[in-house]
Structure formats: C-alpha cells, structure tokens
Image (cartoon, rainbow, N blue to C red; front, side, top):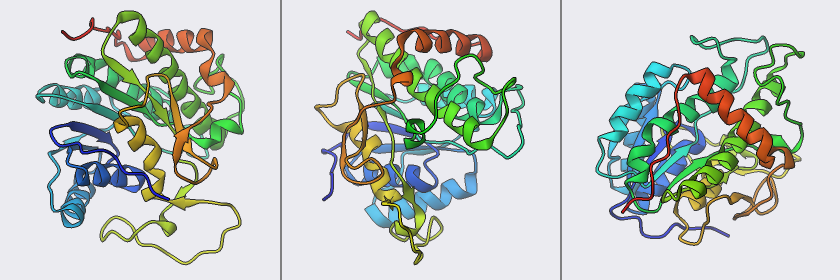
Length: 302
C-alpha cells in the first residue's frame, strides 16, 4: 500500500536534512509531485549529490540548496534569511536530527547537542521564518518526532540532562519529546493568534537504509536479517509528507505509520507527556530564553 501526495505545482517546501535518509526521500517525493523544494543541509557536497539524485529520479531540479547547521544559531539565522527571500513557503519540514554521543557534548552555544540541534535549532528556524510562513495561505510546519518517545518519559525539569545521569538514548528521546511539545504549543498559539499556519507533527516509524530504494551517492540497499517490523526510508518519509501536503490534515494532528513502526501514514496518538499544555508552555518559554529569540506570531494573512 502506498500514499501519494496531491499535485503540488506552484508550492514551495523547505526540508531540513534533505540531503540524506528520510529527508532525501521527502524532498524527492515532494519534487516528483511538482513542488519547488529547498534543501537545507550542513554538508554542501552531500546536498549537491542529493540534488543530482532528485533530478535523475524526477526529471526536475530542486529549487535551491541552503546551508544550515542547526547546532549554530548564526547559521540558523542565515538560513532563515534565505528562506524569507522566497516568494512563498508552503511548508517547513523539520526532518534533520542527530543522535547524541555516548558522552555529553554541547554546541558552540553550550546546549546539549541533541536538544540543541534537534529542538532548539528548529525552534529558532521556525521563529525566524514565521513571517514568510504566515504570508503563505495554508502553510504548515511539520516537526518530526520519533517512535522512541513511546518508550521513555520526558524530564521537563532537566531538559539538557545537566543534573541527571546522561545517556545517548535519553538525550535523543528528550530532544524528540521537546519537538512534539513544541508542535503542541505552536498549534495552540497559532490558533489563538488566528494565524493561517498549521502545526502538524509526524514520526517515521522504524526506517532503515537497507530496505530503501537505491540512490547513487545517497544510499545502497543491503541484505540483512531483522526480527522487528520496519520499512525503508522512502516509506518513512510518508507521515511527514502527508502532514505537509494532505488537504484534509488539520493543525494539531500527529501522523505516523499505521502499525507503529511501519505501514501507510495515518493519524497517530502522541505520548501523553508530549501534549501536556503546561509542560509545552514551559518548554516554549525556556526555548525563547535559551536561544534569545522571541517567537512572534503575525495575525492571519489577508
């Protein structure tokens, strides 16, 4: 079973981490549906390889490649400036993410690297691109969480694991909970402001390169033996793609694979912690303080 986006001719989408993995397939599928796609990526060489692969697969070029290092707020601001020069921005898909290291590391701004990159970088990017998003009728922000949030609780009192025992898995899960909490609070604030932007979250299930279609310079399938149900990264792209493009998708929804780790994209249930309004509001305030970026929401586009 597959899911196909509608005709996206005339629309523009930006995909963070669009040069590899699930982000690459999101970008390829958007392009195939007629959209103009901006690849936001840290590594220019890999981004160029992704652009070449997309052209080979779809017969269409990506609209632009924009440098973006989510762990560096100066890079985030520069990328947001480039996006703000576009005529329109129909969707900003928060696909990029990193796994934490075994030992606690920080970004140049002193943030724990997983939370700093996966959540705070995307928080800042969204805040700085909100004017162009709000100026595009029906635009969407698609934060991408993880199935891992079902397996571990969020610690709102120690976002960056400065006091509790550190582990790479816990840091990664903290960052993904933060992403979903951001989606929850962004949806609430967008509704309150009457802004014509939707916040629709997604998670890809369990997606691996070995089950993905071959793309020269991007990935190569392999024969492996697994007991867990998984799917390729091309299908892991579907929940975010549906959240970004389905005409019937509504702000505040959360899309994931039908069977949890795999399957066609359907409306899913997020972890209870990730929808707690008090925790979400507290995290929002903390994110503004940490990044030094106030998140202003323009009124509804006329």
